[in-house]
Length: 513
Image (tube, rainbow, N blue to C red):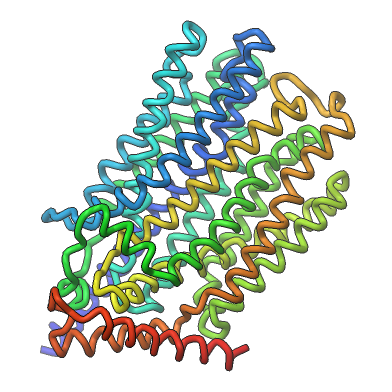
């Protein structure tokens, strides 16, 4: 009997490890995909997409495409909660989230390849039809990518209701995400130049080189999405099974706006996300047009990759001794110092690399703290509103990243045109005004946003590990009493309970400070 129990426990342990590996692998391709879409697609647009078009016309087309991307991505912000509502209301024998990993990963990957081909060369045949079809293709791509992203992070509360176990899954996803996102930064130039040489005989960037890059990222996206679809299994905890029906789209938006802690965490993270992607999106210009050493840009990806590999597994260890609140504050402070250094020493290669270390090291801490705070706000919202909205709540983070990505696309396009950093321009063509425009958009404006992010988190975000534990205990007590099952539960009772927990959480934060 003892041996049978041991074998059963061993099998369960191996299954748990296998599920963690499958889940972690998913974000490797997902983050690589996001970087290819939010950062390098616009680099591709400004450098090669319109290389066969007259320079003046090309500049106008670059402006049109970058503007369209910004408009499309901002417009789709309002769609993400609806997509989260669709995921929340999905009922299949494979669960709520896994079907969207399968479909979202497949469709978005195929369409990424299409846009990296210039719509199969249509850009060189008819620019009007290219723009029309590009808009349709990009909207569909973004929707299916969002379904994949929302279902990926929305799966965490379905895998565990324990805050520390959730941090393990978040750490694993962030660990591989760092490899995927920053790994793309390391390999993008080598891949593009190698395949450009294979197809054109020249090491200069070309349409064919970028197309090969898109195909590689697309294949990686499919494989990693399907690892989650086929390698994980959702658990059905008591709190999930007893949660009320999620309702329609209007209730989804209502759930978001009634969850004050979700909104404050979201605002703080949004400010960080815009600053972060605005800077990372134009760092390649720093090396190409300011430092005049584009080959050294790959070191940026190496610094970011190493920082992510170290900090992602280290985060749960640090979090056992240091509350998430202080990890976030310490991370944003490091980024503030980095921005000041980048603004002052942008012509000094050594100082730039020192600043980039300070910039990239805290990124994982900030992102994981935000993700965990958003995840814990699910139970906060369930206690406050009597509704458990998992995917809808966690659709907020992809939505915020999408805003940041849209802003990044706009900034990259703006700088490329305003500073003359398009086509075959070189560092020798840059004027003092060009450099100042670059530094203002890449470093000084993001610096202000990071400071605001820090202030919002310090003074408005109250949800903490202790507060979440108290919320779960109250929800379990209500479950035992049969209150959660009631559709006409008194909202006043829930509000009182939430206020009590929030008060104790705030007191705990104050005593810790």
